[in-house]
Image (cartoon, rainbow, N blue to C red; front, side, top):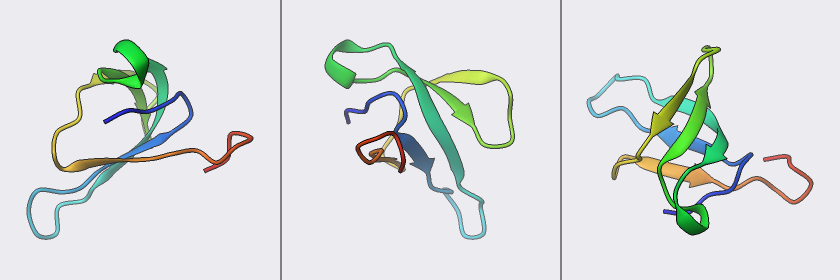
Length: 67
């Protein structure tokens, strides 16, 4: 799973009716766009270091920085 700064990460809920999480990748700490990522989750001002699991997907930002 590779990403760039500005991409969005979606982590799906594990159980029925579990809300998912959506965040923006603000820093890449792995080589060549690989995890871990520093993510700013929606609704939070604190960034978090994230190593995505199989329930996550990356939404790549469109050229120009918009997703």
